[in-house]
Length: 186
Image (cartoon, rainbow, N blue to C red; front, top):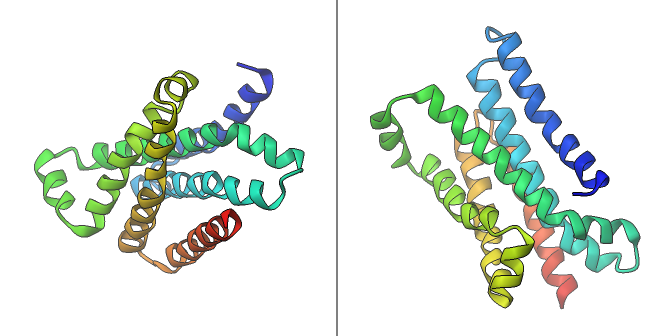
């Protein structure tokens, strides 16, 4: 792995390290609620960044910075999945009761999150050069699952947030990204 890519991954890991440090150092003020919210926020923000790469590349075809983003899009997507996995792990550790987890999973608010995670799992597993080569065109078709999974993520956020206004703003950003991607491809 190149030095540049190591630095990118270090930068992508810093929020997780900060979340962990805050939770350990100040559990009274930065507890479960903050940790689960912040990890979920980072998962969503990185997902938006990942999805924004295609319209940016289509809009600024000759730009070197969009080429750099295009080469690192999978890294951003995997980092988004890692934060979603951290988000899920924090939730599971806090609940620590399979019965309660299964009961809550039946509610539409959490079901949307579980479905998004299930859709993201094969994307994260196949986000490597070997899978791209082995799956050929099938890889691209599989990775189109990111779009319905993203919708599920933001519906989950809107339904579980104490104040869903921020989630609605992000849904608007997702809609703008998807509309611009569609328009620029035409």
